[in-house]
Amino acid sequence: RRASPARSRMLAGSRGRGPAQRSSAGRTSKRVRRGASPASSSSSSTSSVPGLPMGAQAAGGTADQMAKQTKLTNMLEQVEGRLKKLESEAPPFSPPPRSRAGDIRVVIGTSEQASDPAMVERLMTMVNTSYYESMKDFLHPRQKTYERLSRGEVIDRLEMGDAGIRANRVLHIAYRGDTLQPSSVVGCMSSTYQPPWTEEGCGHWGLLVVDKDEQGKGIASVLVRAAELRLAGVCEQIQIEYEYTPGHAYSERLLQFYEGSLGFQCVNGYNRRPGMGTQFRKCRKQVSAELSHRGELLRLQQLRTVLTSELIALKDQCPSTDASDGVARDDCKLEAALQDSSDEEETDASGMAQAVDVAGADHKANCIVTGVPLREVWARSFATCRGFAR
Image (tube, rainbow, N blue to C red; front, side):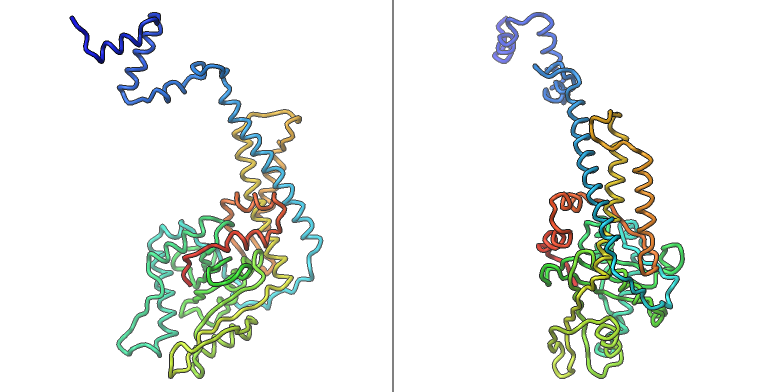
């Protein structure tokens, strides 16, 4: 019986093969028909690749892990060296004024809070209510609400904190007591290393809000200290913006707080509401040497924690090696460094408890290896950031 053209081609391709080869080809054909690609089936065994010894792929993976471990170890040594230098050059410390909000803690929001509908609702309601109270004298008498943030915007701002020390903009949350929950939240604010409306080296904070029933208790000052400490490790200046109407009670309080207590100076102001004298004021202040030192110290402590954690994880993945590999293998030393850095981050120099998210430091770690000053590196990396709303 005459074979079909397709069968003829298949038979011609199998001529000259032995039975084992033809059966192997048949098995491969079946695998392809079942949905497995020839490439995936052949890669399952290293012996099917000419010139590749058995176990070479596994060895290559181990070599990559060891190279990364060596790189992380070198980074950690550089961080430790910089930390020792900063600690030896510490400028005289001026403790902040005694706060009336000694039981207030400040953390950076993450997707953990964004996944809690009650937390999102609490933050959104607190922000919008505070903005309405500050603006109600300028709104139509029938307008009883004001939306500064939507639920989606609150979720977006919280999720930005997942990037850890790599995050550009974050949302700080102030709460009272030992547990962060919707009922314990008393305030919030944002801080940004490099917003699109300032030049390199000038950070920004805003959206400063304290619950209506908690105002006048020093909570705003605690929030500002946390935000400015974060910015000080990267920025040389800090900018804020706000609206000011002469003679308006709330505006006069803002002017006294921002340009009086906090030391900001107005660099640009223009009329926003003609006939009312309302100004949109842009204000700046220089980051002090003391605050800059504390900010860089905190960032390096965070980075040390990340590097140590990654080294411990790689140590668990890699097989044990001898001392000739040049890779640190002292588990106790790594775990002790992780514990020490965590303890140092928990409380900053102002005595305010801080919970700091330090996930994802690859970008910052690579910058340290280049030898470029940390402040300059972070200013460059955020100089092109766009799309951030005030």
